[in-house]
Amino acid sequence: MDNKRNKLTHVCLGRGVEKQRPAAEAICQQHDLKLSTFGYWIALKKRTQEPSGGFLSVDVNGRDGQQLQIIYPNRVRISVDTDCPAY
Image 1 (cartoon, one colour):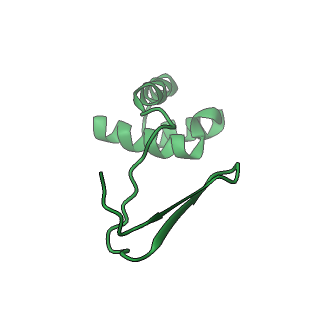
Image 2: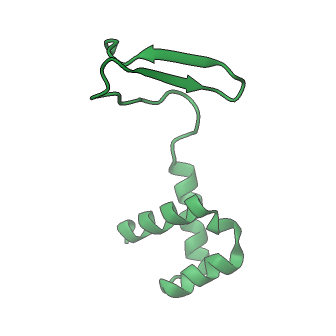
């Protein structure tokens, strides 16, 4: 059941289905679930997700000699050579 719950909640959260009652009802009917169970699963998934923000890892393997550039919405730019050693 956990595998089914993880797949459904991951897909549904990505599409915003939990905010659309008709879509949520259709999914529940298709997968033989009660709407309350689906709602509980969504709430549980939201509580256990990693918070957004913070740091993330960027894999630049196979891109030696190139430059990675990250541009934020406020126009701050970070440029790093990909052959720079990782710390």
